[in-house]
Image (tube, rainbow, N blue to C red; front, side, top):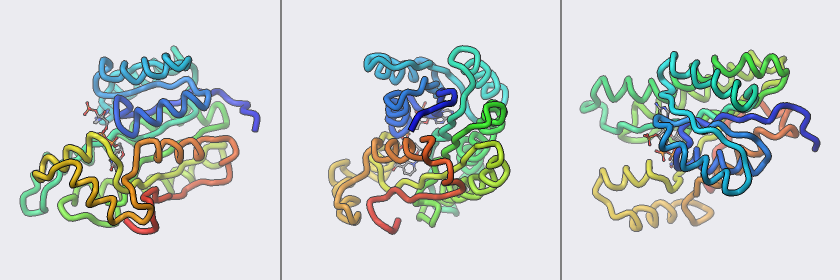
Length: 253
Ligand code: NAP
């Protein structure tokens, strides 16, 4: 299908993991990609990987939970790459603990990055999409949205992103903007590696135990999520909006 609109995408938390794989995939799909992460220097590695393949990318340092940094970052992207019409709200953190031990700061930080971050980024980017009468927003939820021991904060935030997705789909649809949500299962990344370390499990044993419970009999890779993002942001997916797709190697979390 011929792409007729501006092809500038923003991926948050794209210095590594799912975000980096998604940024690289979108660059291969023909997008100029803004690689946003906390540190611009960390985002540069993803930009280099895209440029090495002949793509166009820009490293931008911003904390997605800070309104001034978000607005400055999005303005810079629009000036240097063009109006952004694709936004992937991927930046994320975990601060796991059982509820009786969970500190207020750990609750607030997780809400700040996932919920406030996705809200601030979306608010800043949607005006370019509305002007272009085209847009694609993808929010990263998680199978943890269905409940996961030790993740009251993260699970709440990831469930919240599903409601955020559905409401935005209703508000922005008439401007040609679709909004969807991907809820990954177990994906190999620094985030899951840190979880294994925190609970004192050997990484290979940890991955094998998770893979044994997944119907397709393997752990997920960042590229599995990037492939799904690629579908959601395509022009041909214009009638798919407000959906949550569990990309978890099977029907259950
Ligand atoms: P990751 O490897 O930890 O990468 C997350 C990236 O987000 C990091 O580069 C991190 O930067 C960045 N980030 C954190 N806080 C930020 C902020 N305030 N502003 C800007 N960037 C920030 O995680 P991942 O596994 O790729 O996960 C990506 C997304 O998928 C997250 O939303 C996660 O919750 C979700 N997810 C992951 C899994 C999984 O199994 N891996 C499953 C379900 C959902 P620093 O490196 O500087 O901290």
